[in-house]
Image 1 (tube, rainbow, N blue to C red):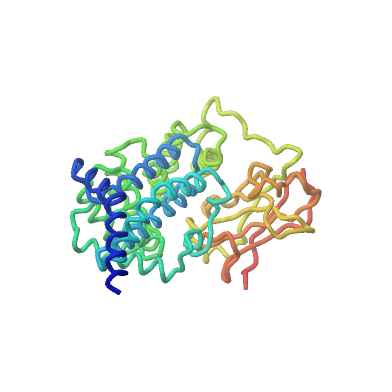
Image 2 (cartoon, rainbow, N blue to C red):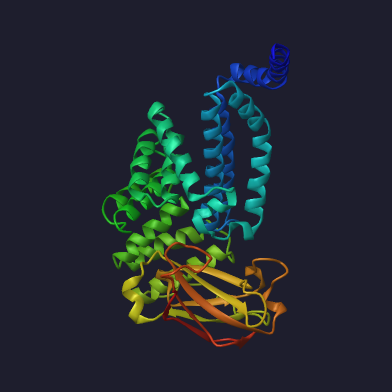
Length: 406
C-alpha cells in the first residue's frame, strides 16, 4: 500500500511538473487566475459572435443560440473548477480537463457557428446539445449563483448568470442579475439591451417603462447596437409610432448586408410599419425578390380565433415537408407572431441538411406553427396550420394557423 501511495505521489508530481507549473508561471506573470483565463477565452469567442452579428453573417436567433452554447460550456468549466477545490483527486481531473478543454471548446464553437443545422432551435433551450438535462443545467446555474455571492464584483459572472437564468425562463432572476452586471458595466450596450429584454419578459413581455429607459441607455452607449435598435423599433411600433419604428429598423438595415435572412425579415417588418403608418416607401428601394423554380412562396397568417392566445414575440416556423418520405422539414423560415401575416419564400438555402433540399422533391406540404417555447419540435399547446399538397415551384400558397397541437 505504501509503495502504491509513493508511486501515486510521483505520478501526481510528474503531472504537476508538466501541466500545473507552466500554467502557474503564466498566471504569475499575468496575474490571472485559471478562472480568469477561462472567462477571457470565452469572452473572445463571444466577441467573435457579436462581430459576426454586426457583419450580418450570423442571424440574431443563431447568435443567441451560439452564445447560449458558449455560456453553457463555461458553466461546466466553472463547475469543474469549483469541484477541483474540494479534493486532490478532483484537482488532477480539473487540470487535465483544463488542458484539453479550451481547444475542444474552440472546435465545438467553430462547428456550431459554421453549421446552420447546429444553430437550429432545440428543445430544453439547447441543453441536449451539451449532454445536459434540464436538472443538470439548473444545478450548474445554482452553483454559479453561489459562486457570485463570494465574487459580487465579477461583472462578467453576473452577466453569465443572467443569461443562464433567461435560458431557464427565470426572467425576474435574470433581470436582477443583469441589474448587478449593468451597475458594474454601465456602458456595455449589448449587456444593457439584454437587460431590457429580460426585464420586459419578466413584466409580461412589455417593453414600456423601465425596459424602454434601459434601451435608451444602450443606444447612448452604442447607437449602432443591433439588438438595442431592434428593441427600440419594437417600442415605437407598439406605441403606434410607426415612423419611429421604421427609423430604428432602417438604421439596422445600414449595418447588415442586404439579402441575408435577417435583412429580409427586417424589410418585412419595415414594410408592415410603413403600411400601418401610411408612410411612403423609401425611395430607391428595390422590389422584393421572387421565388425561383426550386422554391415555393405564399402567405402564412393566424386565424382570428387564436389572436388572444399568442404574444407578439412568440416564434413562428414556416416550413415545407415532403408529402411522401421523411418528416424532416426540407426548408424552414423563422419569424415571430408580430410578423403575421407574413409573405414567405422557401428555397434550398433554408435546408436543414445538404441531402434534404426542396428542389429534390416534386410535391410538398407547407406548414406554419406558433411555438411559445421556440422549439423546432411540435409541443402540446402549439398552434399550427398546413396547406394541401402542392408542387415545388408553386406560388400564392395560403397557410392558415387554425389548429392546436394536442
